[in-house]
Length: 292
Image (cartoon, rainbow, N blue to C red):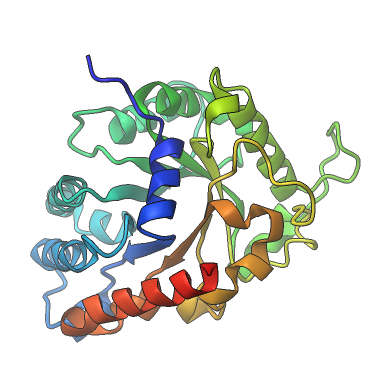
């Protein structure tokens, strides 16, 4: 039987060999129109397949935003299944941006849908929401670890309206003054450190979502201390269209920079189907230069 390679190890290899750019697949109505595609299940399928075709061989990770497929109902999910399959078949690590969160058997079912090998919706990792308590996600985290999959837990997102919740100070915490977002980062780091083979892993398989436009200090997230061991994967939206410069990711994330995935969507997809590959290649080169 083939040994399961942890997602964190695969991601570490991607960062070393293909760079840290993660290309979003966000077929919203405006982009479909600009690409000359119908706002339908056929349109979102074609959009996704074109992004996969342009990204394969240039980057190692893509991130389909599930909402833009889900709005087309059952046909949209069929389109998504095709995009997921083609992306993984092309050797890309696929992060399904589903932002699921629940308790008990419900959250377990979400994990089964997205993280089970052979599932029609199988992805390499998913995004989840911890706001019913980080412990409510335990079934998903355990399934991910067992299947060699990954999970990215929302910690501090770029949207301004999230700050009131994510920067709130916990009333019950072992760390005085801990913010909600900071506690998520600490909890995920502890989970990775508790893995059976943690000492040999370069990156953990459970990561966090931290927006590149977030003031980490104000959010209660330490960017100055020692890097966590194993490293913490950070899915970082907010680059490009939202204002952060991808080449400045080290200055933004500090001690967390080694595990950062630079996620860009609209700033790349806006180039259209004909210019897509060129923009991706250029951004990869820019990030490569920034890494030295």
